Image (tube, rainbow, N blue to C red; front, side):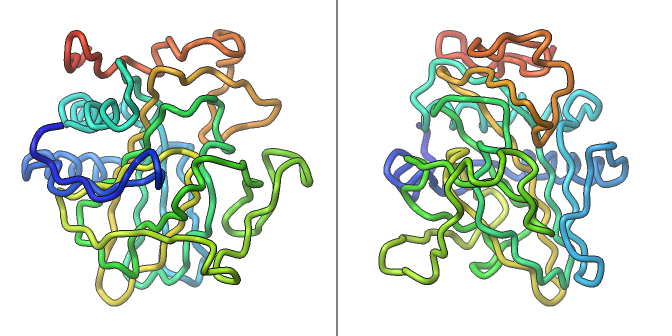
Length: 273
């Protein structure tokens, strides 16, 4: 897997840090993609912080309208790293996700799993969390090691704790990890531009706020490996893929223009279409 330094065990912990996986040009491209997204937010964009607490802005699924975003996703090593970590022979894009916490945003991103919000099933997946600004330990993404092995916990809205996806009572509630700290192993890394975190979509994770003059711009890319299949929901997923259930059956591969093939083991990286 090249000369990158990997900290952690993806299969055991459900999250790893890959040191200096991206070079300066690739980080500059990611920064440009984030700034292009912030300058032209989509209808899916939302504010994930309280109105009196800085600004935490996120947006989804912009690769097809922002050329620099598509170029970064296709030309940087993220898909290849995802293939190696998941043991997959091919990697598709699921979606891009820009997350920006402006200076002084104290609000913590609560513990959650990503996959219950999604319309996919399977275990060979990887989410890439790439900051383009230095991130200290207090503001980094943290993970509860081993939670990618299950169970699924109830997904709730970040600001008002509402169950908008699975019905209340249908999934286990998120444990109070701090109340039984000896049982749970929490991992996280201080990061410099070029460092990246990869994690399974079912790994419980959360993060702190940002202090002082620090800004935390992150480009996250979600990758689908060999066993990932379509899992239509009766409710709107986050992000939404309206009408997809009319084009892809339940339990089939995510073979659709919305989810382009990025990398295969037999041919290597695919070029932009």
